[in-house]
Length: 252
Image (cartoon, rainbow, N blue to C red):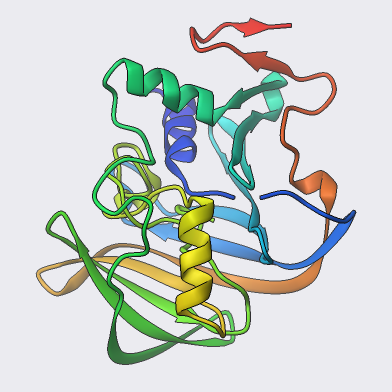
Protein backbone atom coordinates (compact mmCIF):
# COMPACT_ATOMS: atom_id res chain seq x y z
CA UNK A 1 0.00 0.00 0.00
CA UNK A 2 1.42 3.45 -0.91
CA UNK A 3 2.25 6.00 1.78
CA UNK A 4 -0.47 8.34 0.51
CA UNK A 5 -3.12 5.64 0.55
CA UNK A 6 -1.99 4.53 4.01
CA UNK A 7 -2.50 8.04 5.37
CA UNK A 8 -5.97 8.33 3.84
CA UNK A 9 -6.98 4.89 5.12
CA UNK A 10 -5.60 5.77 8.53
CA UNK A 11 -7.39 9.10 8.63
CA UNK A 12 -10.73 7.81 7.38
CA UNK A 13 -10.83 5.37 10.26
CA UNK A 14 -10.42 8.08 12.86
CA UNK A 15 -13.16 9.36 15.10
CA UNK A 16 -14.85 12.86 14.66
CA UNK A 17 -18.05 15.11 15.43
CA UNK A 18 -21.01 18.65 15.29
CA UNK A 19 -22.77 22.03 14.17
CA UNK A 20 -21.70 25.50 15.21
CA UNK A 21 -24.40 27.79 16.56
CA UNK A 22 -22.07 30.79 16.54
CA UNK A 23 -19.14 32.05 14.50
CA UNK A 24 -16.69 31.10 17.21
CA UNK A 25 -16.52 28.54 20.01
CA UNK A 26 -14.21 27.98 22.94
CA UNK A 27 -12.24 24.82 22.58
CA UNK A 28 -8.81 23.25 22.64
CA UNK A 29 -6.05 22.52 20.19
CA UNK A 30 -4.24 19.27 20.95
CA UNK A 31 -1.02 17.95 19.46
CA UNK A 32 -0.87 14.13 19.42
CA UNK A 33 1.97 11.64 18.98
CA UNK A 34 1.38 8.05 17.86
CA UNK A 35 3.70 5.17 18.64
CA UNK A 36 3.57 1.56 17.53
CA UNK A 37 1.56 2.08 14.32
CA UNK A 38 2.00 -1.04 12.15
CA UNK A 39 4.61 -0.51 9.43
CA UNK A 40 5.31 3.09 10.41
CA UNK A 41 7.51 5.13 12.69
CA UNK A 42 6.25 7.74 15.16
CA UNK A 43 3.50 9.93 13.73
CA UNK A 44 1.98 13.26 14.77
CA UNK A 45 -1.38 14.89 14.27
CA UNK A 46 -3.29 17.99 15.38
CA UNK A 47 -6.84 17.97 16.74
CA UNK A 48 -9.17 20.92 17.26
CA UNK A 49 -12.18 20.17 19.44
CA UNK A 50 -14.96 22.48 20.67
CA UNK A 51 -17.01 20.59 23.27
CA UNK A 52 -20.55 21.75 23.89
CA UNK A 53 -24.10 20.53 23.43
CA UNK A 54 -22.81 19.06 20.19
CA UNK A 55 -19.18 18.14 19.71
CA UNK A 56 -17.17 19.74 16.92
CA UNK A 57 -13.80 18.30 16.02
CA UNK A 58 -11.17 18.58 13.30
CA UNK A 59 -8.22 16.23 12.88
CA UNK A 60 -5.24 17.15 10.70
CA UNK A 61 -2.80 14.40 9.75
CA UNK A 62 0.30 15.08 7.67
CA UNK A 63 2.77 12.61 6.24
CA UNK A 64 4.73 11.58 3.17
CA UNK A 65 1.52 11.29 1.17
CA UNK A 66 0.38 14.82 2.02
CA UNK A 67 -2.24 16.13 4.43
CA UNK A 68 -5.64 14.68 5.25
CA UNK A 69 -8.22 16.55 7.34
CA UNK A 70 -11.25 14.93 8.98
CA UNK A 71 -14.08 17.07 10.32
CA UNK A 72 -17.15 16.08 12.29
CA UNK A 73 -19.93 18.61 12.75
CA UNK A 74 -22.85 16.88 14.45
CA UNK A 75 -23.54 13.73 12.49
CA UNK A 76 -21.89 15.22 9.40
CA UNK A 77 -18.42 13.79 8.83
CA UNK A 78 -16.21 14.74 5.92
CA UNK A 79 -12.65 14.18 4.75
CA UNK A 80 -10.63 16.91 3.01
CA UNK A 81 -7.52 16.33 0.88
CA UNK A 82 -6.07 19.85 0.44
CA UNK A 83 -3.30 19.02 -2.04
CA UNK A 84 -5.81 17.48 -4.44
CA UNK A 85 -8.62 19.95 -3.64
CA UNK A 86 -10.93 16.98 -3.07
CA UNK A 87 -13.42 16.13 -0.34
CA UNK A 88 -15.55 13.13 0.63
CA UNK A 89 -18.73 12.64 2.63
CA UNK A 90 -17.79 9.81 5.00
CA UNK A 91 -21.41 8.95 5.81
CA UNK A 92 -22.07 8.35 2.11
CA UNK A 93 -18.92 6.25 1.90
CA UNK A 94 -20.01 4.13 4.87
CA UNK A 95 -23.53 3.72 3.48
CA UNK A 96 -22.09 2.38 0.24
CA UNK A 97 -19.74 0.13 2.18
CA UNK A 98 -22.65 -1.23 4.22
CA UNK A 99 -24.52 -2.12 1.03
CA UNK A 100 -21.41 -3.93 -0.17
CA UNK A 101 -20.95 -5.74 3.14
CA UNK A 102 -17.79 -3.82 4.10
CA UNK A 103 -17.35 -3.10 7.86
CA UNK A 104 -17.53 0.61 8.70
CA UNK A 105 -16.27 2.76 11.56
CA UNK A 106 -19.77 2.75 13.09
CA UNK A 107 -19.98 -1.02 13.33
CA UNK A 108 -18.88 -3.35 16.06
CA UNK A 109 -19.97 -4.19 19.58
CA UNK A 110 -21.27 -1.14 21.42
CA UNK A 111 -20.44 1.19 18.54
CA UNK A 112 -23.21 3.59 19.58
CA UNK A 113 -22.57 3.29 23.31
CA UNK A 114 -19.79 4.32 25.66
CA UNK A 115 -17.92 1.16 26.74
CA UNK A 116 -17.70 -0.07 30.31
CA UNK A 117 -14.89 2.20 31.49
CA UNK A 118 -13.43 0.87 34.75
CA UNK A 119 -11.06 3.09 36.79
CA UNK A 120 -7.67 1.47 37.42
CA UNK A 121 -6.55 3.77 40.25
CA UNK A 122 -3.51 4.85 38.24
CA UNK A 123 -2.87 8.50 37.42
CA UNK A 124 -0.83 10.15 34.69
CA UNK A 125 0.24 13.53 33.39
CA UNK A 126 0.57 14.63 29.77
CA UNK A 127 1.05 18.11 28.33
CA UNK A 128 1.18 19.50 31.90
CA UNK A 129 -2.31 18.13 32.60
CA UNK A 130 -3.28 15.45 35.12
CA UNK A 131 -5.45 12.49 34.15
CA UNK A 132 -6.85 9.25 35.56
CA UNK A 133 -6.73 5.86 33.86
CA UNK A 134 -9.76 3.80 32.81
CA UNK A 135 -9.71 0.36 31.23
CA UNK A 136 -12.14 -1.43 28.94
CA UNK A 137 -12.17 -4.58 26.84
CA UNK A 138 -13.56 -4.84 23.33
CA UNK A 139 -13.51 -8.06 21.30
CA UNK A 140 -10.72 -9.39 23.51
CA UNK A 141 -8.49 -6.31 23.19
CA UNK A 142 -7.66 -4.38 26.37
CA UNK A 143 -7.39 -0.60 26.05
CA UNK A 144 -6.57 2.00 28.69
CA UNK A 145 -7.41 5.69 28.55
CA UNK A 146 -5.94 8.40 30.78
CA UNK A 147 -8.72 10.99 30.85
CA UNK A 148 -8.64 14.55 32.19
CA UNK A 149 -11.52 16.68 33.47
CA UNK A 150 -12.24 20.31 32.65
CA UNK A 151 -11.42 20.07 28.94
CA UNK A 152 -14.74 18.80 27.65
CA UNK A 153 -15.76 15.39 26.36
CA UNK A 154 -14.07 13.17 23.82
CA UNK A 155 -12.97 9.61 23.28
CA UNK A 156 -9.78 10.69 21.55
CA UNK A 157 -8.80 11.69 18.03
CA UNK A 158 -9.34 8.29 16.65
CA UNK A 159 -11.10 8.41 17.69
CA UNK A 160 -12.39 11.23 17.70
CA UNK A 161 -13.10 13.21 18.29
CA UNK A 162 -14.94 9.45 19.79
CA UNK A 163 -13.06 6.34 19.46
CA UNK A 164 -14.69 3.53 21.33
CA UNK A 165 -16.48 0.64 19.86
CA UNK A 166 -16.08 -0.77 16.37
CA UNK A 167 -13.74 -2.86 14.33
CA UNK A 168 -13.44 -0.16 11.72
CA UNK A 169 -12.58 2.69 14.07
CA UNK A 170 -9.25 3.71 15.41
CA UNK A 171 -8.54 0.11 16.10
CA UNK A 172 -9.79 -1.06 12.73
CA UNK A 173 -7.75 -1.89 9.69
CA UNK A 174 -5.43 0.96 8.79
CA UNK A 175 -6.53 3.02 11.78
CA UNK A 176 -4.29 5.31 13.85
CA UNK A 177 -1.91 3.25 15.88
CA UNK A 178 -3.98 0.11 15.31
CA UNK A 179 -5.71 0.61 18.67
CA UNK A 180 -8.52 -1.91 18.98
CA UNK A 181 -11.97 -0.96 20.25
CA UNK A 182 -12.22 2.55 18.87
CA UNK A 183 -14.56 4.16 16.35
CA UNK A 184 -16.20 7.35 15.16
CA UNK A 185 -18.31 8.95 17.88
CA UNK A 186 -22.01 9.36 17.20
CA UNK A 187 -24.11 12.15 18.69
CA UNK A 188 -25.81 9.54 20.86
CA UNK A 189 -22.49 8.31 22.25
CA UNK A 190 -21.29 11.87 22.86
CA UNK A 191 -24.46 12.63 24.81
CA UNK A 192 -24.02 9.49 26.91
CA UNK A 193 -20.40 10.41 27.66
CA UNK A 194 -21.48 13.86 28.90
CA UNK A 195 -24.14 12.33 31.14
CA UNK A 196 -21.76 9.80 32.67
CA UNK A 197 -18.86 12.21 33.22
CA UNK A 198 -20.34 15.56 34.23
CA UNK A 199 -16.93 17.17 34.83
CA UNK A 200 -15.52 16.08 31.49
CA UNK A 201 -13.72 13.10 29.99
CA UNK A 202 -10.85 14.03 27.73
CA UNK A 203 -8.24 11.38 26.81
CA UNK A 204 -4.60 12.43 27.07
CA UNK A 205 -3.24 8.94 26.45
CA UNK A 206 -4.79 5.89 24.81
CA UNK A 207 -2.86 2.64 24.89
CA UNK A 208 -3.51 -0.92 23.82
CA UNK A 209 -2.10 -3.53 26.17
CA UNK A 210 -0.40 -6.74 25.16
CA UNK A 211 0.75 -9.05 27.94
CA UNK A 212 0.27 -6.17 30.36
CA UNK A 213 2.51 -3.78 28.41
CA UNK A 214 1.57 -0.91 26.10
CA UNK A 215 2.01 -2.25 22.56
CA UNK A 216 0.55 0.77 20.76
CA UNK A 217 -0.36 4.15 22.08
CA UNK A 218 -1.17 7.75 21.30
CA UNK A 219 -0.72 10.64 23.70
CA UNK A 220 -1.11 14.41 23.91
CA UNK A 221 2.11 16.41 23.70
CA UNK A 222 0.61 19.93 23.87
CA UNK A 223 -2.77 21.42 24.78
CA UNK A 224 -3.81 24.99 24.07
CA UNK A 225 -7.18 26.51 25.01
CA UNK A 226 -8.36 28.91 22.31
CA UNK A 227 -11.32 30.29 20.40
CA UNK A 228 -12.10 28.16 17.36
CA UNK A 229 -13.66 29.72 14.27
CA UNK A 230 -16.59 28.18 12.41
CA UNK A 231 -14.42 27.76 9.31
CA UNK A 232 -12.56 24.95 11.08
CA UNK A 233 -15.69 22.77 11.04
CA UNK A 234 -17.24 22.85 7.54
CA UNK A 235 -20.03 20.44 6.61
CA UNK A 236 -18.87 20.20 2.99
CA UNK A 237 -15.77 20.90 0.96
CA UNK A 238 -14.62 24.54 0.77
CA UNK A 239 -15.04 26.55 -2.42
CA UNK A 240 -12.81 25.17 -5.13
CA UNK A 241 -12.87 21.60 -3.78
CA UNK A 242 -14.35 18.80 -5.87
CA UNK A 243 -16.48 16.15 -4.20
CA UNK A 244 -15.28 12.59 -4.61
CA UNK A 245 -17.83 10.10 -5.81
CA UNK A 246 -18.00 6.63 -4.31
CA UNK A 247 -16.25 5.26 -7.40
CA UNK A 248 -13.20 7.36 -6.51
CA UNK A 249 -13.75 9.88 -9.31
CA UNK A 250 -14.53 13.50 -8.61
CA UNK A 251 -17.68 15.17 -9.70
CA UNK A 252 -18.55 18.78 -10.12
